[in-house]
Length: 554
Image (cartoon, rainbow, N blue to C red):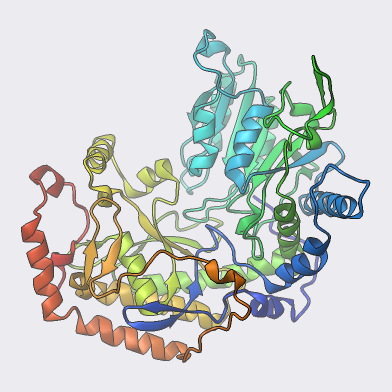
């Protein structure tokens, strides 16, 4: 399985120190039910900033900042050296060797995968006359993020998705058979997620990589969901990886970082840089030009994300300082507590396997005796009543979502037709949240109590909310209209935070439970019925509705 072990010891106060450094840790947000503490449960999408990292950038990077591609001036040399320090820091973190290169790409793994497609010479160039039997082949896993599937679909290659095995992982038997059946292919790539961003399932990276190598295929791993929690080893003795992509912005301290592609030099197949511009060439004349021989320079055309890469390197170095074994222990405890609460709570359904190595990433459905609650409604309730920041939808993992939700092709196409008619609220999905290793026991307890309260009583507040049929967004009926956010105040000499009365977690939970038990006011109930009668759904759309609408609550 993916390595979660190391020998580093965690300084006893480092975890607590990091908690204190989280930017926004004592922030409150305005809601229709008053001010609530901001409780962030969306690290799977993006991490949180750290004051210590931003202080270093403000103190040691920005005062001496300049564009790279210059060594003659102090600022150019200083910035260039810090950027190469960042590159080496990431290499050290993933055990990259002298035969591996690290390329900073855009703002996440999406840009890294698209760059990889180009470096492998598979970028789409329109219609080709090559037959399928002679086209490269790409195998993808059953729980890929769109960023590790859609670029391959559009590449000059055939794509075969592998199914789930009985334990919810990648079916290695099917993979081995597929590799054997396609041995005649000129070029085969296996590109898989090291961990699912939906269910947290951890892949058998070493075992799958060995099987790929046995059949002469490249092993590419998307660590976007996994790298903030799992050790990445580019050069394990028995299973070296050919390429790795990940998103440092998902690490604690990482927001505003560049994406990362690490790849072995020997697998590069492109003759032209993926991004052509300044810094990609060694010499240019009026008639010809020569590309830079070093791919780490050649593939980072134009002004790179300088501060972004430096910030990303600092963030990527944190898990190793904590110790991956310590992180795994904390996560196991969080997951055990969550599973116990789920089993005790009627109306909560966790998607995914029950007996697999998993990160504490949870995708949930909320049901009542009247029907299912829309994920957008649940996310809004968690926000308004508890300040909890979760995420609703398919988590950019549509194919996996079809499997988890049991959607047939016919049902999926019918829902798609409804969405195309303007009923975007019909998109299937779930509520996703995660319990980060920086969460303490009190925060975990608060989050899980909130989930249970919404599952138990959430149906009673439906009438207090309106649903935008096209976007699928829910809004409290009495929520004041807010103008678009602006940051013109950045030039103000003093930016003092507004004073806020901080409620204790148990007080927030008690107030939320009282609100939920009381249900929507009679006026809201009457409004919800009137709204529906004024704009009834077409019969064919009505039959597709899988969730309770505002007028259908208790």
